[in-house]
Length: 469
Image (cartoon, rainbow, N blue to C red; front, top):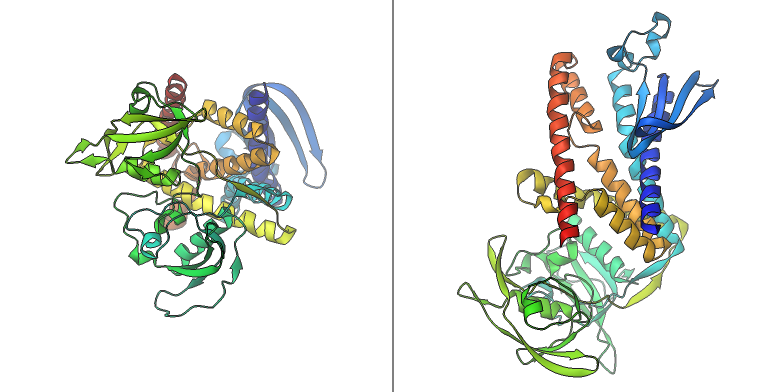
């Protein structure tokens, strides 16, 4: 029940904010709004909202299918309009006014996301401690002498050709998320990043400064380019090498691994963290075949030996090993909160980062470089809503922020049924000086509907496959 309620609240909130953006911008340009609807289909609730200031008598409805919404405006393309009210028709407004009205929905979602992320930053939340995991082989981090396990307490950015840097980093790092922000800024500004690190295992625990040169990073396999820290050789904060969910009939299952096992050794080497184990599994390939892994695991306080034969898969043109199990437990966390002004800045920064990452994912799917398996439908959203609720209200608010960014950007896709499709029409009008003909609009609407239904079908199939697995 909590999953269902969390899902429904997320839908109602995000759709309402999106349509409210269109509605308020339409009022600002004196467009007559006929209906404001949350949900589709036969209305379950219906009432009228009068506004003397805006000369409106808008019908407000809530439809029985809460999978979207719409704002219906006076428009001559939708039917005859009283000559006395033609100046209030949407199609009679300037190109700039129509563009702003259409764009206001996605922008409202992005503004909501900024506020939601700002609230979580201001209230505070548990964030991963900035302890580095074992760096990727041949990465900038490994070449700089980092081994993993170092605690990052500060960071600063320097130009690539600058030979010296300040003695003390200018920015204090309180969590791994703060380190992520610094890495993102370094990537965008094309600068090197200098870390102040302390080795928790050293008795003196003295600080030292390590410079990471992005151009020196040459990981032997395709790292996740969506994470700026991965570019320097880090795939996440240090986490215990514990085994999570295991896929049925996978190498991990056949080898006798159980969920909750902690891997102590692999091929006779100590396993300091989950990242080291993941790298070893990936590299368990020789001449196109898999290399056996000899593990020592701790289970219920007892050490035991297991042998696994990984599965060899092709990842972006590189053969890599897989065992069919989640490797790594939750990292250590620290409570972090911020002031109101800084929280708003962090919220904006978070939305900017998610916008870039989402754009890369969408571009990858459209160009065939990414997998359509990343698409999730209502079942996936409901599942994530339920999971975030179980983790606490700050996690749920963060999930709402992420979903609001996704909804805003999804509506900007150039599909005729979405806001982005209308913006494409307006771009054509701007370039040619005349609107798209109604005949072409009808054709585009049909093509757009087919594409949108195909996307929805793919998302639903993906949902079904996830349930099946």
